[in-house]
Each structure stands twice: as structure tokens, then as C-alpha cells.
Length: 229
Image (cartoon, rainbow, N blue to C red; front, side, top):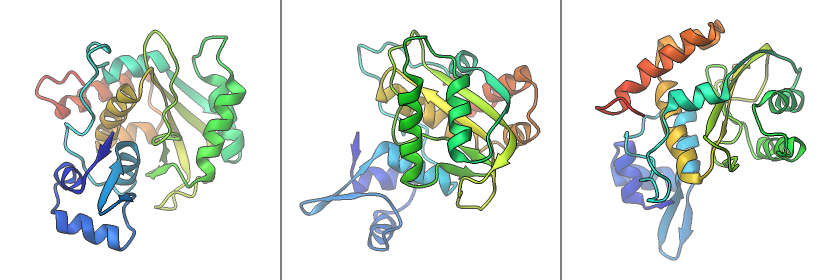
């Protein structure tokens, strides 16, 4: 999952010189190993999404031979569902309400999942701007489920997540995946769709479920020639 400076430059569509400048100014998450720098895909995706920097469509890693075909974004959204009027007055209470409403098997420890999401928030805001948050972009929630899911949670009242643009969060996306590869694939698809202005406007007005599903399915077609992401 580690990327080189050259990889990062290619995926972001910038020069390697620009990447090194970001490193020197500590503006991009990376690690020095000997005389080389390495980057985590999930951290880079979170960093780029928060700054509205587009990534190439092939950013997510190739699926493992044992994983089968990549899941479609629309299938994951339908599996996770859309929840309205989620309560909470601050990040902890909102995250607990979100976890309570996730479509999960009875054997899943929701208390543990909540502690994971809360711990991630303590590392820095997961608000990506425009009133949207993805609580675990760099820390995948991995569960052995029949299929991955993306849950959309509309908050009853916007809550401050200390996002970079200062806007309170009104919508949270929670991903549950069987593997890191699937997590990154769905996250890349979601990040792409969230660049669509009409889709974000639909989130802001908390549009009906089928309208959101249809808009997501249409928006993701621009990610690949087949439109099957």
C-alpha cells in the first residue's frame, strides 16, 4: 500500500518537485525510510480529499485475485442505506448515534466500533469540507460481511467537526469493508462522486433515498469508461 514520490506525483498530476516541496513544508503526510519517502494510500486519499485535489481514477490498488470483481459504489450505498434525522450535539454523541444505526450483524461489537471512530477523531478532523465527514478514511473498518457497505447519515442538526473550511457537518459516510483493498476502492469512488456539485447539493437538502442513489450511480460513471465503479 506504500507509494513513492513518483507514484504520488503521477496520481495527483503534479511534478515530483512539487511533491518534494510539500514534504519540505510538511504539507503532505509521508514517511522517510532511509533516503526515500513513502506514502500511505489511505492517508494520501484523505489528505487530497480534504483539499479538493483530484486523484487519477486508477489510484485504488488492483484487487487481489482472491477478492473477485470490485464492488460497485451503488451496491455498497444500497447495502449501507441512508439514515435521516440522526441525533447528537457534538462529535462523540453523533458518532454513537451513527454506529447505533449502522446495518450490522448482531455479533458486531458496536461499542468497540464506536471507540475506534472516536479514537480516529482524536487524531484530527475527519471533516472533508462542505459539511461532509468520513470518520475513518485512513483507518478502515474491516468486517467479514457478505458485501461491503456505505452508510449515509444525515444529521438532525449540523455539528462542528473542526473541518478545514470551518463548516459544520451535516452528512457522514461510514464505510464497512472486508479488506483494505475494497475500502480504498470504494473510498476512491466516493471521493470522486463527492466532487459532483449536484450530488453534494442533494446531500445538503437531504434528498430522498432513491434520488441520492440515482445521482451517485450517474456521477460515478465518469470514473471509468464502463461506469461500473
